[in-house]
Length: 220
Image (cartoon, rainbow, N blue to C red; front, side, top):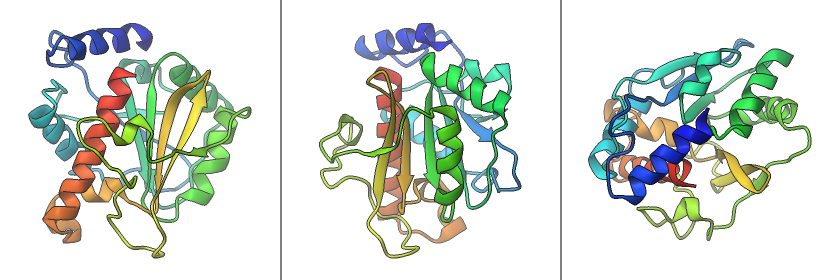
């Protein structure tokens, strides 16, 4: 894929241009099997983040999100895929292999625990990268210091179990290929205010952190 796509995006950003100025590209929501609600934030979450990035990062992302299945060859058209939910997720061997090739080839995955997702997604990611484990990223990691600085790591958007938010990373050959937010709920924070009645302050924090993820994924 995508090493080519990523290089194009990196050059555009470095030159101060809109990402993909001559390319109509999208970011995608991953549709998965297992009975979990892959569609949990379907209506407004990614579209609002895309709008925020296009306005504040000078990106040129198609305002319409894509929806892609784990085994689809279409996944290689998207520089970033987002996955969220509350419940069960299952990747069969074909899907796990496809996702592995996607991430090894330059793609990036963002996982947002929408509450209760952790116990399901971790063993599935282990199928994709059996040789790698999630590691908690230090607050000094560049993903927290793109256009917006988060000196204390992830913002806390929803309380859930009243635990501190954590950001985990999965690496392949020293490249961060997956960022995973836990006890944070970034995806909910991107949604329209009326959906969860989040404060404007929290929604703005969530959108800024989401923009950092986009910027990092497109320029690493």
